[in-house]
Image 1 (cartoon, rainbow, N blue to C red):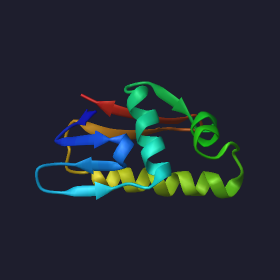
Image 2: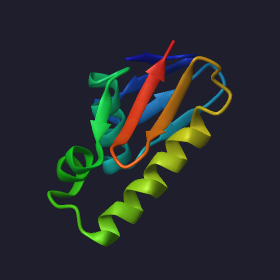
Image 3: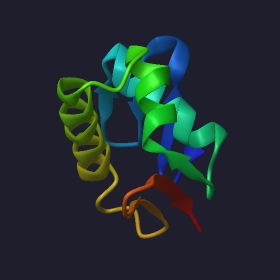
Image 4: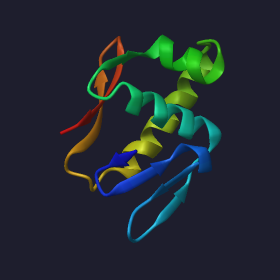
Length: 96
């Protein structure tokens, strides 16, 4: 997968650019792949939680926010890549 200046290798849990290599956790990898398989589409929070944890309890929900924050931080300098909040629904990975 290509995301801006990054190449994503889910089988290696790796996100790399010309200047850096970022090793992702299993859940970060699953989340990013889910976003990429649904680029520019709204993903409901419940669907994401079920894909990552199999349930949507409070602690998993807070953990999801942490993972999304980490992905946002990684892509903060990518002008054409962003993760939008869709209030009371979920999230959307936008790649222009």
